[in-house]
Amino acid sequence: MAAADDNLSEFEKDALISNMMKEKAKITCDSAVKAFTKCAHQRTFSLAWACRKEHKAMKDCMEKFYRKADFQLWKEEYLRNDKHDQSTDHDVWNK
Image 1 (tube, one colour):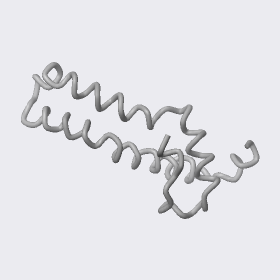
Image 2 (spheres, one colour):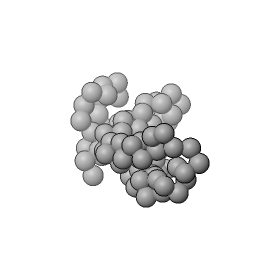
Image 3 (cartoon, one colour):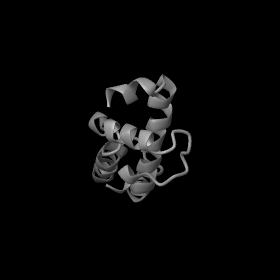
C-alpha cells in the first residue's frame, strides 16, 4: 500500500480523512457528549470532580476515532472509494 500513500496529498491526509474520523465520532458519541454537556452546564471549578464519569465516557468514546493505528484503516477506505466523494457510507465506520 506504499504506492497509494504517495498518491495522497497532505491536504487529503490531514484534512479529509481526519474529518471523516471526526464526523463519525460526533455521530457515534453524541449521547456521551450530550451527557457531559448537561453535567458541565453552569459549572466552573466543580466540573473537574462532578462530571468525571461523563467526561471519561465521552473521552473513551471519542478516542476510538482518533487513534493513529486506525488512521491507516480510514486511509485505505478512503482510497477504495471515489477519492472525492465523501457522501458515501464508509465500511470502516461500521466496525
